[in-house]
Length: 206
Image (tube, rainbow, N blue to C red; front, side, top):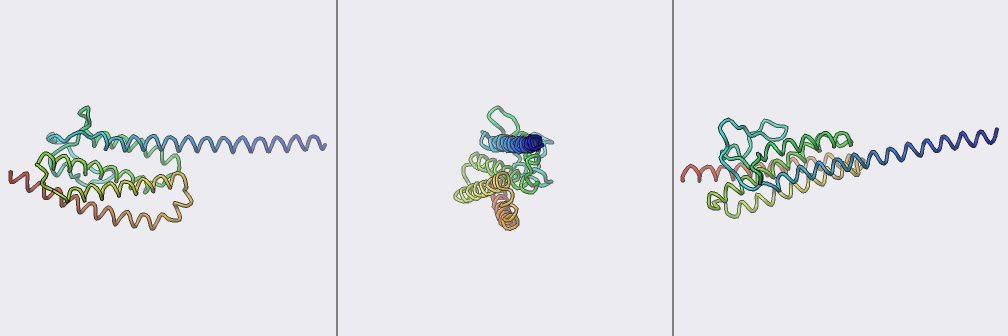
């Protein structure tokens, strides 16, 4: 009887260990998928090479919103090195990130901030390239805009990574972090609008 008891206990422990190890491997796989998808979405902004006149009827929308993009206001379209529409590539990459991150348990609002930051970064790059074509009329204000955009992009990426690797800690700090990000993106939006207005006025006057 004692031998049977030890055998049964060993089987239970073995099954528990196997289940635990399987779950650990699954979490690692899901986290790896998120990291891969996140690298793909950040690579879109880094691969932007130029802006071209926006084709008639091509509408620019922010990720998950109905907000008109800065590039649409300027009448341009950011393109990648192969000539592909950068906004379309970003939306496709974000869709892949959403699937992977939700499977890994990352809150949707964290994803929206991370995706929105990448979209903001893409629009800042479109503004920078449009300003370059206009002869650099924005001056130092462009440097301020780009810096603010990169800081916001970095902050949202840190939030995403924290929610992925340290979910309980992220939940405790979530409210304060999101409030700070909302203030930051409001200020960034105002700077983008000011830059678009200045460029639009310059293009109309030329």
